[in-house]
Amino acid sequence: MVTILAIESSCDETSASVCRDGVIMSNLIATQEVHAAYGGVVPELASRAHMQNIVPVVDVALKKAGVSMIELDAVAFTQSPGLIGSLLVGGQYAKSLALSLDIPLIAIHHMQAHVLANLIDERRPSFPFLCLTVSGGHTQIVRCDSPNEMTVIGQTIDDAAGEAFDKTAKLLQLPYPGGPLIDKYAKEGDPNRFVFPEPQIPGLDFSFSGLKTSILYFLQNAGKSNKFKAELTATPEEQKRFREENMADICASVQKRIVGILMNKLIKASEQTGIKEICVAGGVSANSGLRNTIQLIGAESGWNTYVPAFQYCTDNAGMIAIAGYYKYLDADFSTLSASSAARSEW
Ligand code: KG4
Ligand code: ZN
Image (cartoon, rainbow, N blue to C red; front, side):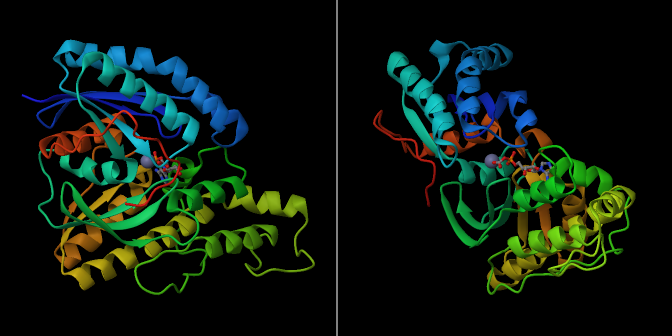
């Protein structure tokens, strides 16, 4: 029997999870409310909140799992990528625990863990599978040949898909994080009312910055054009009225374009690799437009599709625990000198 405690603290969620033999027994997530007032995550405030949250979150995760510290076989933690101050809090806690309990330490790459969240559910993909990982900081297509063998075959060259949602929401003057709100408005809107451009990027890479600029001009011109105009064609009052009266249709049209960009590359990746086991991961996989479209296209293309349960889509320690479990089986342990890193390739 292998029991692992996992810690995730890469951004603004303090999370702890206990997993036994690859089964998640608890997954506690403390969301930091402090950032909403600033329109985005404030790194220094995030590190401080992690310091306050980490001990109680771990305590509750252990209690919920009915596991005591002495039963732990290893501690896994998110090593990278993320906000460095936030990563350091989780990393330091995990190291101290591993040292005091004299058990192995397992360093996990946050993006690999997002992919492996697809192995939590009993219905899971067979290898090799493709995973579209879409979060606030990343957009990648990953080929996964085994739990510990993954290759990034496509990624964004600028903004991430979640950023495209959040920045659009900001332009629409919606509160942060705006992705879920765009999704909500989109449900009542007409996705074909406005047309935003699709970027022409070669291969399996993505780009979202052109879309963001086009939405900016579109709103500045109150829907009359999405090209730059030296002289604005709408007053600030007209812009506000246009935004408010057309919120649902704008959100639905933007969401349709973002989802379209993602799906076109995923279809291409499946055709190029011949792989039809298709997963989605990351916070944006909560998007209802993406979920519906992947089902539809999956049925047309003969794919088996997988999306983790919602609590394992956004940042969570359950995915760190499952990644830790597979590394444990390979005895892929880390030393206490493992350093956290804001960025890292794999
Ligand atoms: O994976 P995640 O929780 O954190 C990162 O590692 O970034 O992803 C957060 C991102 C945010 O950009 C948020 O707006 C987006 O996921 N998001 C959504 C939805 N729920 C979360 N975007 C669109 N529709 C949603 N329903
Ligand atoms: Zn994430």
